[in-house]
Each structure stands twice: as C-alpha cells, then as structure tokens.
Length: 473
Ligand SMILES: [Cu+2]
Image (tube, rainbow, N blue to C red; front, side, top):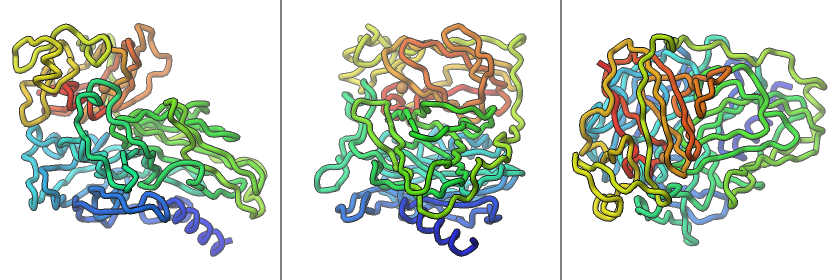
C-alpha cells in the first residue's frame, strides 16, 4: 500500500493545507527551519476567494510547523520585517526567562528591520505554539502564529498525525481584514471575534474536508490560536479520546465536548471506524453563531482494519516538579471588570480611578486584585513575589461575568480545585479556563527564576488590564 497510501496522505494534506506526518513512517523530527521572518503577506482563505492581507511568518499563515524531539535544542533567528516592534514567545515551552520573548519584560523589542536569536532546550514533549507577545491583540489575529511540536521519545502508534491551528479573522466583503483592533467595546466584552473561522489559515466549515480511510487511527493536535474565540468541539460518529492537554499527558479518556480556549491545546486520538463513503461533521457549538469546523469524509478504499488499532494511547508523562499542597503557600487573585458588573474603581499607575475613567481615559476594562495593568512597555512591578523553589497554590477568583483562559509563562501548574472542590485527577496545564464567577485553584513549584507573564489569553482582555508579572527569585 506504500505509494497509494502516501498519495492518499498527500492529497488529504493538501486539501486542507495541513501537515500530515506519520510517526510509523519514521519522518525526521528535527525542524530545518533556522529563520522566522515576520512580514506582511497575502493569501486566500478559500479557493477562488479574494486574497486577504495578513502578517505571517515565512510568508504563510500559520507560520512554518516547527517539529523537534524532546531534549533537542532550538536555535532560531527571528527577523522583523514588519513596520512594528515585535518578538516571539514560545507558548508552553519551559524556556529560561531571557528566551521567553516578552518585549520590555524579558528582552528589548525587536525593532523593524532588526533580528533576535532565540536559543533554548526542549525539556518537555508536547503540542506548543509560537506567537508575538507585543500588541498581541493585533499581531496574533493578523496572522502571526505557528505550531511547535516536540515529539515524545517513544511516540504512540498512529497511522497519521495532523496539526490543526484553529483561529479566526475579521474580513470584509473585499476579503481584506477589518483593521479595528483594540476597540474598547471588544476589550470590555468577549474580545474581538472574527467572522471567518480558520483551520490552518483556510476557511473552516463543512467544505473543509478531511479525507479519512476506514480503520485508520489519527492523532489530532489542536491548538487554539484565536485572539478571543473559545471553541467547544463535537465530532459526530467518533470518540474524541483526549491524550494530552496543553502538551502534557492525561489518562486517555473520551469526551463528548472539547472546550478549548485561546492559547490552549488538546491532543486527540480518533479511530475512524465508520464505513467507506460515509461523512461526518466536526462542529463548534460554543457560540450561537458557531457551526461546522470540518467534514470527515471516508474514501472508498477497503478498510485498513476492521477493529480499532490495539496500540496503547497513553503518553509517557514529562517530568514536572510536583507541588506539595501540604507545604504550599496560598495566594489569591481576584478578577473584576468587563461591560457587565464592572467594579466601581480600579487602580491605574498607583491611583484609584472610577470605572468609567478606566475605560474612557485609559482604555482599560479589567482588574486583577483591583489593579489594571498596561501593556508591557508601561508595566509596573510584579504583583506577586515568589521564592525560587516555593510550592504555591494560586486561588483565582473570577468576579466577572466572562470566561478567562489564564496563562502562566515558564511553568506548568496542576488544576487542583474548582469552586472549592478538590479535583480527583488534577491535570497539568499552562492555560486554564475560568468560567464566569468561577474559582479555580492551581498549584505549582516556582522553580524557574525570572519575571513571568501571567495574563488572560483573550488577548483583548490582556490589553485591557488583565496582565501582570510574577517574579520568581
Ligand atoms: Cu479574559
């Protein structure tokens, strides 16, 4: 089946513009990409559509897929061919602080025409991604994002592996991006939601066809690179077996709905056991305006196998420092703000201001422990100081009516409690969704020294005050 299978994979891959790799075929893991160049570019989001203006890495949206093996080192030169300052952040990779890519906090911003060399080791296998951290509410939805995959030492056996970067874009009828970034109306609500959902830079929907063969096992790495859109995915006729969240192994389990907020990832194993010629939808059901993401269409080829592949789905866990709750110090962070139920005041630059001034004068809408922080260039002292090696429980109290995917840099944490109830199987995450009015407890060991961003990954919320740094020293 060698050639026909390869052709089949190639055609399935090109139809979606996605990357298909098969660990069973022994594809080389080491990315040969040495340069990431950010520049304005254009591409069509569907066949025959007018071209849409983007900012992309190496001329495409998403940027090139970076793929390495666990334990390898990365050396990449970032070249800034934009007319704006930028830098690259490696979401979820436990890098040293100087390589974290946060302008004004961990490095000087890379000026237009400038470059910066990133060099770091990859301690964890998993599904990660990269994007700028400067004016990210604008630079990410303009198209600057890509996947960074780190293979396990012993990858699980599958027939095919796919990486889907989910995102969206706000386009007009002329196909051009509507450049209304950073409006207070978006900042103070759910964030700026695009009107076209994208999978790997191409329009999602029922017409976004993934050809599958009956009997095959697919590993699907999902990354939510949208600035604000939360996805709740359903896959008809198939079990979605989650094997990792945010790149970290979990006990394989089937879910009916998969909620994946901005910044978050999920690795799925899907056994395609339906009949040749059949067709199924993957739907997003999170928003009223949501709809199909993709169609799974079975080819006519005879089934690859009659029963699902028996190989284990469980991934070997990465070695992460285990927090000891008995000796952990507790810290509280309260979140307030937004259009509904906004607080009556917030502290900006050390001075209390009324909430309407917060929005009208400062363009801010959210507070953490009463303080609304500016973006990096004007950022103040860390709001939390941790000793290196300190075991920590962060209790995050969401006093808002909105969802917030909260992301901590440089560390993974265990989600140990929800609304005061202990989680039976606390998962590792680098980004956790807080529902409206929900309280989430996370625990971690602050073992990575430096000033680390802690922020909402709805990028308009981050720009609107929901960001700050945690110092580990
Ligand atoms: Cu938020």
